Image 1 (cartoon, rainbow, N blue to C red):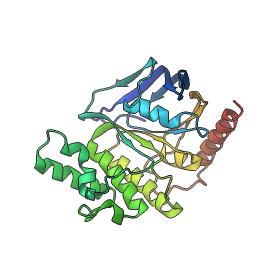
Image 2 (spheres, helix red, strand yellow; image 1 turned 90 degrees about the vertical axis):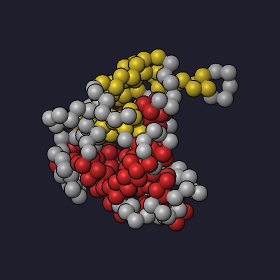
Image 3 (cartoon, one colour; image 1 turned 60 degrees about the vertical axis):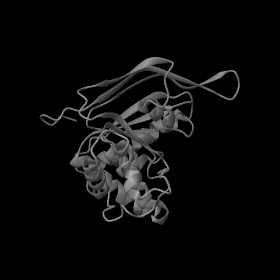
Image 4 (cartoon, one colour; image 1 turned 180 degrees about the vertical axis):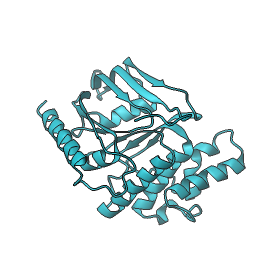
Length: 261
C-alpha cells in the first residue's frame, strides 16, 4: 500500500525470531521458531492459524511483553507517536470500579500529559468508536459490544504507531461483529496506522486486511502470506466479491496444509 505524502509510518520486520517458554518443568517449550515476517506500514495485516499454534504469543512478542531468545524485531520508519505499540486483548479487561472514561484514558493518565489534554484525548477516542456520552458509566453497565468498543478506544487513546489486536470481536454476536468491523474500517480511514490482528475467522481476516499470514505450528512459523487485492474503503463489502472469494480460498487452502503438519 503506497504511503500518503508526509505521512510516514512504521513497518515491522521480524527475522528468524524464536521464543521459548517454561512449560511447568525444568525444560522449555518452543512457541515460535525461526519466524520471518514483514508487516508493511499503514496496512492491516491479519494472522490466522490452528488453535494453539502461537498466534497470541506472536502478538505478545511484538508488544514487548515477551522477549524472544533469538532473532530480531525491527520497527522501521520514523516513529510519529510516543508509544510504539498498543495491544487490544480478547477480553476488554476494563477496571470494574473505574468509569469508562477513566479506563479509556488510563495510558494518558499515568503520563506527563496535562489534564486538559487527557480529557480531550479520551473524549476523541471514545467518539471514534461510538461511546459518546458514556464516559461516566461503569463497565458493568455496558453491553459486550460496548465493552469491546471501550477496549479499542483505550488502545486508540494510547496513541501508538502499531496497533495489535488479539481476536477483539471473538465474544460478540454476528450483528455486533459486523458493525464493529465497519467501525474498524472507518477508524483506519481516519488515521491509517499499522495494524496487526489475530483472528480465527477467515472471512473476517480477508475483509479487514491487506495481507493474511497463515501460521503453522506449534512452534509457530510462517506457512504463507496471502495478498488481498481489494481497494479501500470497503464499506459493507461482502464475500461475493471475486477478489475476496479468491483470497478466502487461498487462506483456507493454506490452513488445510498447516493442519497436516
